[in-house]
Amino acid sequence: MSRSQGVNGQRLFRAVTSGLPTLWLCVFFLAPFALVLKISLADPVIGQPPFTPLIDATGSLHLTFDNYRLVFGDSLFLASYLGSLRIAALASLICLLVGYPMAYAIARTPQPWRTLLLLLVMLPFWSSFLLRIYAWMGMLSTHGAFNTALLTLGWIERPLALMYNDFAVYLGIVYTYLPFMVLPLYAVLEKQDPDLREAAEDLGATPWRVFMDITLPLSLPGIIAGLMLVFIPAVGEYVIPTLLGGLDTRMIGRALFDEFFVNRDWPLASAVATVLLLVVVLPVMIFQRGRGGAHP
Amino acid sequence: MKGRGLAVYTWLALGYLFFYLPIILLVANSFNASRIGSHWGGFSLHWYRQLFADEQILHSAWLSVQIAFFSACGATVLGGFAGLALGRMGKFRGRTALAGMVAAPLVMPEVITGLSLLLLFVSMRAVFGWPHARGALTITIAHITFCLAYVAVVVQSRVATMDASLEEAAMDLGGRPFRVLLDITIPGIAPALLSGWLLSFTLSLDDLVISSFVSGPGANTLPMLIFSKVKLGITPDINALAALIIGVVTLGVSVAGGWMFAQQRQALVLQRQQRTERP
Image 1 (cartoon, each protein chain N blue to C red):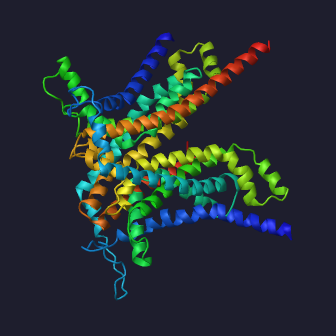
Image 2 (tube, rainbow over the protein chains, first blue to last red):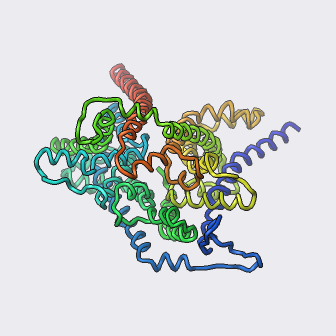
Image 3 (cartoon, rainbow over the protein chains, first blue to last red):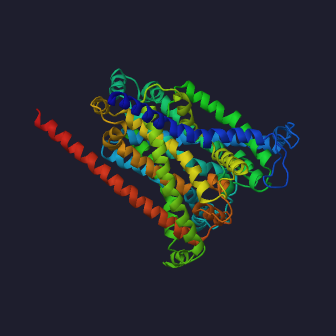
């Protein structure tokens, strides 16, 4: 009696443990995508909600691919998708070039200083992202710190236009996401066996050879993880291009946000989101799954 | 070899300068009496006084803290369950689905998450008449959804390193699952739950994009208010607000970090002691 009660209790417990989060995510994460897809096939109208029903009052189905035609036909959207991919890819590479030597130095530092250096990398991550971008506005603006310093030194005669252009967007993305690159790189570099390097050195390999043949190949998982962690959020970035970018800085997150909030065209914004999901997010998830779903 | 080490450490120092220079200048400027950042008009607490007199900012800050608190609690419960299910229960029906849905929010662009949740709330209202209005409640639901993924990852990795035999023994001795959870599992994963809660709290407090989508008229969170102000350029009272937030975070992380640093140091001293005693 009590035994079977125990088994039942356990079954119930297991059902709750896995069922509750599954149910929540189905309702608030999975189902909404079906709605995005549905509304991307509707016509925009003025009203509340501002789109036509797929099945009208007479019960007939009403689908339109106009929104997708607009997304693929409009050079502005195409430029935004390509701009996002280009900026995110280049910014992740810059993060790698900047972050690798940093992670290397931290991993080679003896304890307990290593923990301190690592904390200093993580500290900005805990403070507000928005305020850190705002801090760069203070650095780059016409009367900002850089221009003031350069003018005082007499290196320039007129303030430089450092903000409201692509340069500032790259800077903002690298600044924001550099910790996401340094941490996985540190994790793989720290785990490397120093005996391997020593053996190579004893056998007469130059430091450069040791780095290229041992350290770098062994840190490849960290490099891939870091590139993903920077690239993925950077592609959909809205805040950085809006605050630091120029009017001609085209990124798809910004285009989607403006289409939704400024033009109030919900169906078109849904179509933009669907394409972003299929073209960028899905391939990345499949790629990650192929690698064994390694999440740092 | 020496020269190479020097170059790498110089690079590291420059990296930290890159991280901290903008923040240090921002904090310094919050005490600047002058409105223009490049001109030092003397030390002043003027912007702080202006900040604390601004009802709108205080109201938004309080709203954001409330939302962050409830989001963190909800995400910790649901994310904790998800992490336990994925880390402890072996194979069960729906495991792949749950694992996928936990991993997906981490790689989802915020604009997509925000848009899809808004469409859900609008449709739910049309069908069920709920949620009646968009605001703090819809923002909290949205934040729980993306934060629970982070909690699940943290809890799952903690559970993976934990010994399962204690729980199994308690179960074999006839402990009710709920008791075992309360007495053994939760104390074991407490550090993971705490860091998951803190992570959720800060992520919720910081979120702008998703909140903008699912919020309604009248519910302005702090990031939404800050964003609408800084879009127009530098505003000195935001400098003061930023300095305050950064100060609180630095203090919190320093305390936690100082503790970790001391522990590492102690472990190191013990190790050395053992090594010298062993000969």
